[in-house]
Image 1 (cartoon, rainbow, N blue to C red):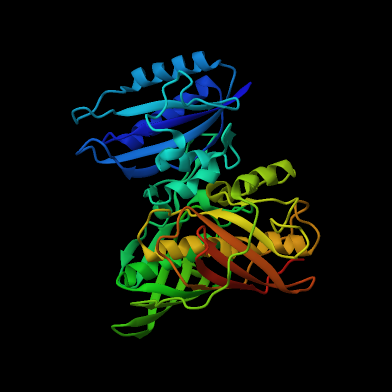
Image 2 (cartoon, one colour):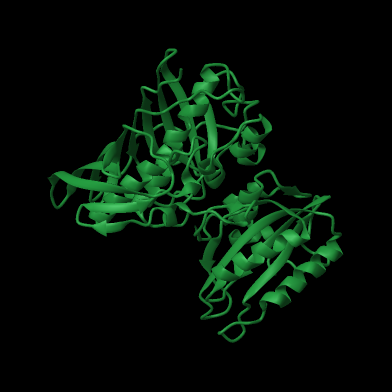
Length: 438
């Protein structure tokens, strides 16, 4: 069997549906092993062709490159590569990007007209699907900085190879109903943890989305979330909002998260019209690059554990053999975390993305402190998390999170978390308190 990576691109009005249909057809060519979210970008080069949607899917296949390319062209014909309601526009395109260690650029195969490393709409999903993937030039991830000015937007979660389908993206999963202080949202199973309860970071994200609905003219500055009861996935939850203080310049909100009338969480959110310029902040540490890290779900699978859907939907990167990504002795754990709302200009969604590593990284650093990282999990239901947001605009595709333990007993732990954007901008700081570790 050979590993291959296939790019799927569409600029048709029904592009998302075409991508979904093509994804369902790929298992007949091999076994889907991984897949990126769908990325959206402005279509350039031909006026009036709107948005371009793209994704990358990894396959284990027994087909040779020639046979695989032929099969991809058959799928193109099946789903109408040239069917479009706009003159000169391709409905969709399938590109063989990489096969068994060899990039297909210039190798006699049809790939994107511009080299992979020059187009973020191809490079970003390829790196997301396989962070360590490389060709003769080196890892693809090292080229992300050179295309940082190209704007792409994630519009889904990553591929679920077992369905196959695209998982719910954070923005879609936070589609709230309601208004005027009362909201409801789906408890999307793609954002549940291994206990079938909702990922705490997602619940904090829902509170931030409700704050954005209340005050879209402001930006979030701080959030404290207290978890009262686990919330099982499926069904719906409601958020009630009360204003403690409101002015033209700022607002403080208290929120209650309930399921079937039972209060499961409480939150306090502060917002302001203008956050202000950061003049002092923690400096980003020097760490090993993301292409040397491993997706957390793959590490949990390899250790015999069962990762939750939220880990598979979000997919942060770590190295358990080098816990702090540097020398393994500092007692800190650092991880590269994908920005699940990359390209969004919504400050509340950006804060929601930052809240996720603040919640998630306390678990592995607790395991590290207890000497059990990569082994039998410790149950860590968080009681309270607080976050302060320093920057929520232009954060790029990846975050670097650093977590450390401030206090640890056999029954509780307190930790601190810092989050930087990939360019070193300090984006958020947080604390996680009173976890029962048992």
